[in-house]
Length: 347
Image (cartoon, rainbow, N blue to C red; front, side):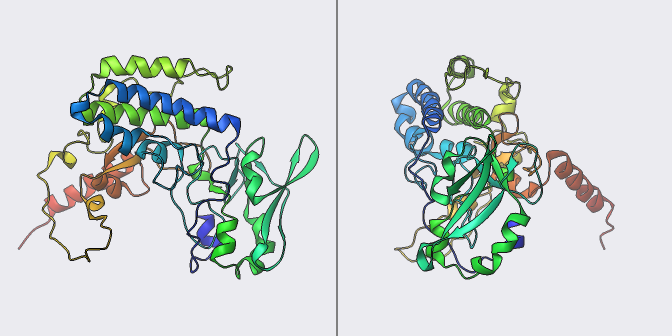
């Protein structure tokens, strides 16, 4: 990964991504379209089965680039529309929209134009990364706080960063936070793919967690996608949007509903661990059946794979088992392990 090659991780940028509250008009319309999807799901959930819980945990939206740092938006926006929370001695956003127009890759990619150059302007605690690009033959400069307004997607490559590494190594937490303006290329996607991912994950939650009739909610979601006015030249749903109920609802690896234990196995009893009463516990996130976003095919820089065909909710155990491998690779690995144990001569 480029981040690990060029940026150390000793100093942590812990603040929000720069310009987190700044959206283009298009950004706002995209997030609001997803809000319509979430509201339609919420409206068919009976109050007795958790309408408010769905909205607070999954459906609510935040008109920000970073989903409100986990406090404003629900899980659907955080997982489908935003990149992961990345912190470190690097210019990565601590969450940002997946269609953010500035990405970082280790080699040229077909879906983004290389920037011309990166410069550092200012002195001491006011230093700013400035990205020089060519727009319609004209050279323009975008400081870190304005890169969200780039008119198309641009990519920064190792050769753009290498001349700056001497200066960047001395940056402290404050400077990195002031310049957290870029996303990794492998997490990027077009806005319509992000919206369809939101819809797929929303359907999965509605039907499996809240017993909503799939055959009733699915046409409602399709109608919302079809009626989008963000770009009339783009027709939704795309060919990536799934129609198969089980494909949407089941964990992509073990093929069991995510509301059940992985592979249908008995729940594992985990021993209690002491924690101070004032400490926040995330221990339940480590449960085998804890729900996580999964990608059927692992994300890569060379193509955008975050889309309705590839994004699912599944079990933590299954997600961890896959690491950065595809379903086929994981199954081949497991098959080998099973066969190896069957052949083992135990004494």
